[in-house]
Structures are given as C-alpha cells and as structure tokens.
Image 1 (cartoon, helix red, strand yellow):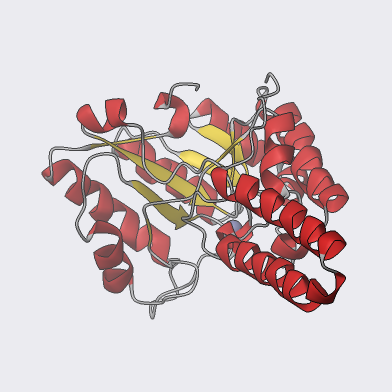
Image 2 (image 1 turned 180 degrees about the horizontal axis):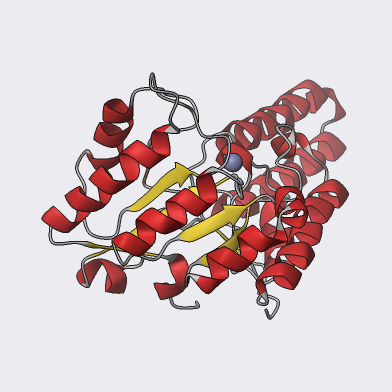
Length: 268
Ligand SMILES: [Zn+2]
C-alpha cells in the first residue's frame, strides 16, 4: 500500500512549539530554566497520558467508528483481535458464515506465522486480515521508534505474505501507543483503528455482561471489538466469544443494522 503523507496532529504541533519557546526562553533568561524544564516535562507527561487513552485522536487520526457514509447504510463494524487461535478462530468463522457476515481480524503476526492455514481460512471466508503487531508486546506504548517500526513492519510483511494482500489498518496492543506510532503507520500506508465499544471478552467470564456492554446504545457506524485470541472462558469452560457472537449478531439484525468488515471503509 502507498505511503501516506504524515502530518503532525494539532497537539503535536503545539508541543513542538512549546519546546521551541522553552529553549528560546532559557536562552533569553537563563534563570528561567526550572520553569522551561517544568513546561517540557509537563508536556511529555501529557502526551504519555493521552497515548494511554485508546480512543483519543489527539496523537493522530484514529478510526473509532465507521465513516458517516457507512453509518448511513446502517453498517456496524466487527473486529476480532489477538488471533489466530486454533480452537476459537475456526468456530468464529463458522458462526460468521451462518449469519452471512464478514468481519476484520486483527492478527498477531507471530501467531499467524505459526498457523498459516488459519489466515488462509480467514481470507477464504471473505474476511480481512489486519495488523495487530508482531508480538503484541505489553510494553508497546513505551517502545522507541526503531522497535515500533520493527513491530509494525515485520507484522505487515508477514501478514501480507500470508493473506496475499497488505493489511490497511493497525491496532496497537490494548490500543495503547505513543506519539511515535503515527509517522510509522504513515510510512507503511496504515491507518490506526480502535473501537467504539469493546466487550472485554478476553477478561470477563460472563457472556451476558460482555454482550450488554457491546450493544449498549448500539448505533449505526459503531465499531465493535471482540477477541478470537486470548478468549476468556465462561463457567461452562466455553470461550465467552462463542456464546456472545450469535446473540450479538441477532441484536445487530434486530436493530435493522448489518455487521461488516473494515473492507467497506473507503481509502482516505
Ligand atoms: Zn490485542
């Protein structure tokens, strides 16, 4: 996919201006250095805190809902993260087939490389494979630019090879990131995607609670996130996502909405 031109968000512009002003202030008035240092440190703390807020778009563009065109068509986006998983992914594909529904799978490339047949199956069933990093490191938001470039770039290479076409979207582990991610995504032609609501189905064991969270205030254009990898198990030992998914698809249909993959999202 073509490289996208990176334009810093207004917040990053303001942060850069603050650094320049702090430097100019200290040159003009050296005794002011504690204030200048405080301003810069405060700015870094702010940027760090914003990166821990997955649904923010202050560090760069972030797909949290489907675009207005898709919402007007009554579409709701459906994403599955952290796969592929040898038990859960085929069962999710089967449930989606039965409801004649397509979804996007944000795959961990390291897992995908060990189970190429599952990526084949995802593609064969008409779903899209998207980039959820190489190793799903829980330190992702603390990585420097070279490590981020490797986590995004190696995953992009592996998933493109396996799926036969490059992912268009990237989601960092747990949605957490730092200001260095956006220029890296731009260089790979990738767009950041997060969610409108997540069900916490990788943590919570009660399917009813997971489902209630996902469909609360359900509206056209919502982007719903579940997990086919790292799935939590209910009291019955069954992966929670497999109990939730058929009910969720029924509720979406009952609202007159259609669940879709990110394939429907037009390029910028
Ligand atoms: Zn994840």
